[in-house]
Length: 475
Ligand code: PA5
Image 1 (cartoon, rainbow, N blue to C red):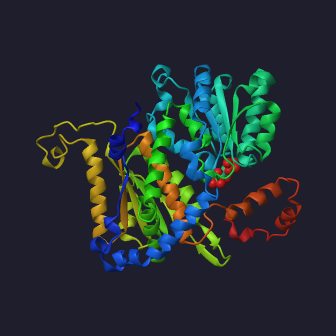
Image 2: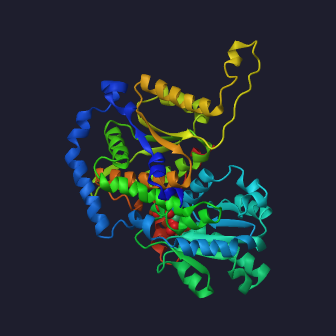
């Protein structure tokens, strides 16, 4: 029996939200939330929960069903067939097609995964090429042998310039080195089953392909083959990951108006109403550092919108800030404690770390150091988190804590799913479309126009006529 089939174990692994420190009882009348504010929102919360349930029933939120319908066996069979023939797995993708895979791999795997000897890893090394910084891509070729690498081209739209240009470089290199027929075996695509250039090319070339369900947008795609294939290629248990997501789905569905995801959304909504336009995500675990990156995209791209559902100008959203405990206690926390009252800080606390290390009892003649002797780093990191919470709360700074019993696939599945539901719920509370990203189109189109992409002639014209930069403003 898998551990995720044992209800007792699942309950022990349940994630929680401690929101004491956003309430008036702990941070005072001026900054805190009153219980009556939750009560006043009760009708709106019910309405939003109903709206989302209807959208799900009408097939408009396919990402909610991902824990149940993904091609797990096909992914695992493919990984089994390929893994021993390759030394490296390189994901080419950006935004929602890269941040989830990075966050999960960093969370679950050994922090020095690629440096471990193959016998210990048993699976290929893992790399992600998301940016088009030329240095990064060229340097990648210094550490991988492309003859022994599988490139996973991930793009929902199948048209993203960054990913497609990387793919073009790799395809050309592989074919020149190995010939067209052999090159094919080194490319696997993850994309929409019908739309975009990537699926056209994949069909034409006969590449192995996994599909992103059509109703699932980039930043909600971590539980599709976007995240699952990369995870399975680094020995991550994807069945357990999806079981964790399904567990969280049940929590959110059986208590649609008062679950951890809705509470997270409602607290942030109230925070935004009181001018807290910055959302700091601060895990106290190096393994979760990249969860903040994934969350930043999810929260920013989903909620940062100019107009509401009735097309009225609203310019809403919260700026996500990525922080890491305890590292950022020595950098950003000064600002959180004493700067403007414009933030809500979410800690992620880990109850049980996978390793323990103790400080030796030395320097007994130096009391200002010897107090550290005998304590573990596990205690130190947790106590520092509690101390930071205490200091922030004393200064009436809104903060709350997502509590993870430990870092494993089941818990990560819950965390991804919970934050996705929270984001959708916050979008509903704000009455905006959380699933589009019109604000990134302008720069994309301008790039296309500058490179002369057909269909962008008007944009090119607009760019040519834009105000020229003033040399006086350049030093
Ligand atoms: O969330 C989103 O939709 C975006 O961030 C996309 O994931 C990103 O732009 C990459 O798009 P694609 O997967 O189509 O290449």
